[in-house]
Length: 261
Image (cartoon, rainbow, N blue to C red; front, side, top):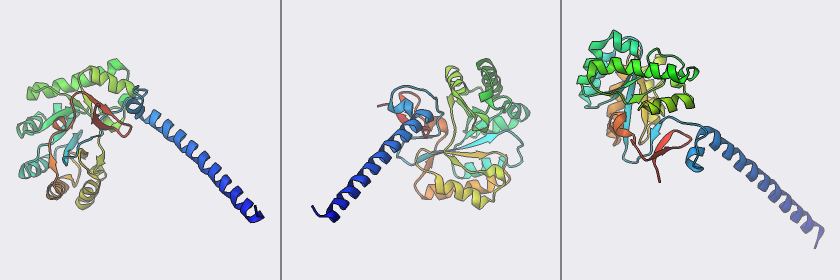
């Protein structure tokens, strides 16, 4: 074998060794990532970390829009009117002190055919609470809503998107589905209506859960743009309670809910 050929063989073997090492590292990193994000529950059959529902695995272009209610009502009527014009039902997550302060709006939202979930009692970082404190938050907030609407509350959105295993487990044991989102409008930052709309329109996919707020400065202006644009693209809307699977499901590391195999 010529000297040049030997060198080529050495280079090839060296590159092969490097690629093999990189592959091992990548597999290790992905395995660790899967374990610590909660995907481990799907791929390996155990649950080291619990994950809320961020979106739903479905291919029918059905999505949900949701509004967190924790302050004010100045723009709520305009949002309700936009939803009515587009014939869209949404999910509204209400903090207890908001529902207690604005019972007429709770009734108005309910009578318009929308779904109502709890957004806690005090809008605290609930991962810092113990099980008993969590139960009180969920119970107190739900009771206020239920006393106004006469309908059972089944959905829960943690304040600030903050959660841990104990929160999800305690909520589940109390009969609640813990709901997050995969499409954030960032309307609370007082973005323009067009910026809010484009954030949603460009990121939504089948099974998405859209996060908005009832009193964002330009939310009401953005809602009609979002609804009509997505409808023109073939999307339809249902409340979250009709989007999610109620049983026989798993949740992957990205929080996407899927039917159990």
